[in-house]
Length: 108
Image 1 (tube, rainbow, N blue to C red):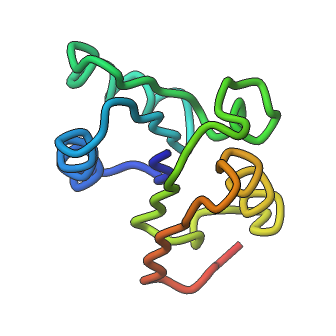
Image 2: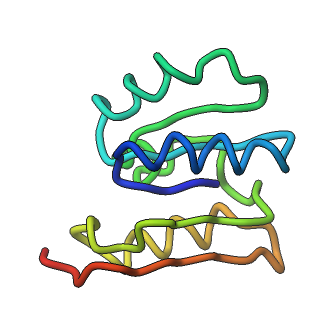
């Protein structure tokens, strides 16, 4: 599970993550970011995309599915940090791990 706002570095991060995974779900801040990522990476097998809204609504197959959740941009972009953390927790298998890299203070 790769959760990020969006940006140029996110695509290279996804490529790196896919080099070591059979399956990866990339969650982005909005549908525009999802469409940009799909345009560049739709050809990669095992890679799926969804918006943050869908992820937080629980309308995904992510529940209890992932060994790792990678949040390379931290949670500064999230308006509701507890809700995001809860959704990430729900997406992890028992014993799953979270890699969180917080670089910016939450301004929300």
